[in-house]
Image (cartoon, rainbow, N blue to C red; front, side):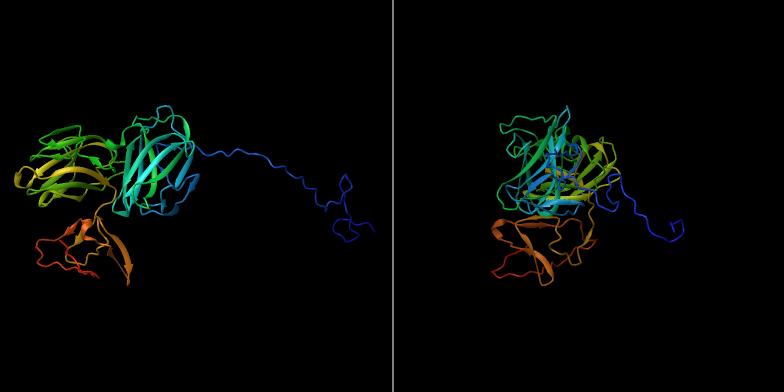
Length: 388
């Protein structure tokens, strides 16, 4: 009996027009090898380019960055990272900013176009920052090997080639971007030289490239400082052989809002340079502002300090209790030593007297009572030394 819907019977097998069984696999068509051009997404050089988003690279490792995302770490001389299809437009780039940190003496970043041995359009020095997580904006104006200013236009592949100054390991690199102006004068997170002011009164420029002979209520102004999304702190590199005083940070005019005050202690000599930090009002220091530094001497005295450079940070300091245990490795800054771990502790190590090492700890709160003793937990396999 022929089969019908809903009933059992002899199954019917259909076939294709070619007579092949419908269950038979279709023949495979072999593809011939072909050349294909790789297309890289266009990159904007004037926005942050995260260092880990390289297209070609050699030598370094990827690791987590304290400021977030990833970074290039373990960078040694001869390593490089290339970033394809960077469009500089018609106005062109004249400066470079690199967000970096170094626990050694740092190193250099050479900028080459279109290949490893392509034209070099700039060299950026990254100095030692006192730690692998102490980030700064390293900045430079683009120049060729003859010292001539360079403007990059059009679309290029950018090769960052890392070169040595003196140490094997150079720095960690978080991000970089190019600028249409001079970042050495306007980037809030770079070291801004005190002598590069736009206007001033009551102070002088010393031959060593710093501000001196600063009178009470003197000021220096710096136009167009870019704080980006907001600065929460300031560091000033100062010396004081007098009574000390303070540096008041005002925005946009001498009568503008006060964003913060840096208290300068008497440091005992004009050749004793230290980094002093202070908090800022991060609701004020946002975007682009003119910055006014107003110097006040203690009790109205002249010559509160000399100023070499200042810089801003996005991280706000926290007061430390002077009468609690302060871990030595949690320094704000320092040179001439390293850190090691052992016995469940981390500590400063390799302290060698001739290196004139120092460690600085900011925001230490002594309250209203002066301490009478200073306790240090230390170990030495030599004849020891002193801590001032």
